[in-house]
Every structure is written in C-alpha cells, then in structure tokens.
Length: 121
Image (cartoon, rainbow, N blue to C red; front, top):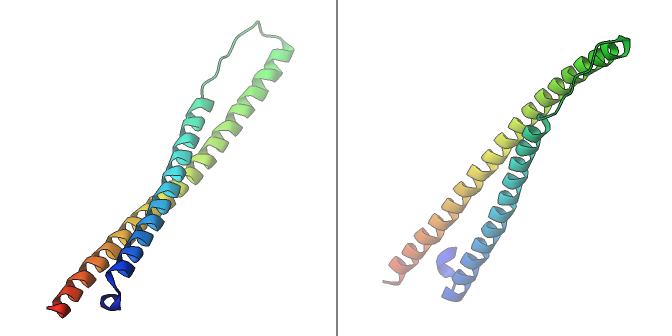
C-alpha cells in the first residue's frame, strides 16, 4: 500500500518509474528511427540509371532478364512493404500501450498521495 511508505521511499519509487519509462522511450525512439531509415532505404533503392544501345541477340536476352529482375524487385518491394507496415503497426501499438501505462502509473502516484494526505488529516 502506497500510503504506508515514507516520503523518501515514494520519491525513490517515482524516480525509478520515471527512469524506466525514459529508457523505454529511448528504446522506442531508436526503433522508430530504424523504421524510418528502412523506409528511406526502400525509397532510395527504387531510383536507377539506364542506358540504351542498338538491339541484337544478346540485348534481347538482357532485356528479358531485366524484365524478370524488375518483376522480382516488385515482388520483393511488395513483401518488404507489407512486412514493414506490420512492424509499424506493432511499434505504434507498443508506443500507445507504453504511454497509457505511464499515464496510469502517474495517476496512481497522484491518487495515492491524495489518499495519504486525507488519512493524515
């Protein structure tokens, strides 16, 4: 029970909670920066330079290979995009849950301190 703790213990519990949530926020921020970096990497990979030469037997085979490579790249992009959106949803869910828990813990500290003051008076 919170109202049985001394002021020193209450401050220690509050500071410990804030430090833990700060560490959680730091790790969450790093996860968001990694997710944003992966998005920019996907965008950067789609830019390319192409040059053309006269058609011959070898060029047609190379063109067919290029078309297949483009199809495979499109499939890979679709897979990584769908996987990335799932990762972002999980990351957003963790962010919301962490924020909610922090709010509940801070509200608990506030209500316990009010209760302790009402028991003293």
